[in-house]
Amino acid sequence: MNVREVMASPVVTVSPDTALKEVASLLVTRRINAVPVVDAGDRLIGIVSEADLLSLETGPGQAPGGVTPHTAREVMRQSVYTLAEDTDATAAARMMLRHRLKSVPVVAAGDRVVGMVTRRDLLRLIARSDRDIRADLERRIAEEVEALQRAGIEVRDGVVTVEVDGDPCRQLVERLARTIPGVVEVRLSSSPRQSGSSSGG
Image (tube, rainbow, N blue to C red):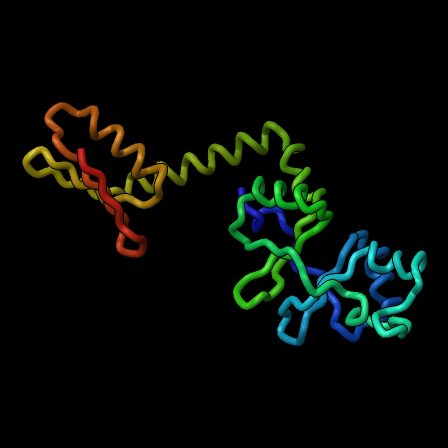
């Protein structure tokens, strides 16, 4: 399962000029712990978290230069960990634990914010019911079977050439083909829209 399947979308975002009072209100009312700061094109330029706002209450309450901050621009962190939509959810969890992150923006091309992943989102994967797990597995098996049924098979002089999509399908077809008496070589390729691969035996 990848990040796209667990992320929250659309995302609550703020502009650099959003007042800190409004940022704090969003965090409370939406029950989130951080909010991405984006420009006019929804591109990520920073992030403001609960900790950033709480530090204003417990710390000196001033931005660099001795000026009291009033907007997201003045307190946001510009160095932000991000995830791509196709990142494996397990890899995302490891990254968040390693860097002690509670939430991470998900970005597409050009740093455009398309989602937000929190620890709670990833925890839901562990808490999934047996019924959901079974339904997910059955769906994926059905998808692989459909891909196998579309496979193109050609045999010439004991050389089997198979055109099929998806690595799991190619691996399965190769293993099956090698169990057939008379097969001297198995060649695998993808459909035209994917890069090809081959395997000799």
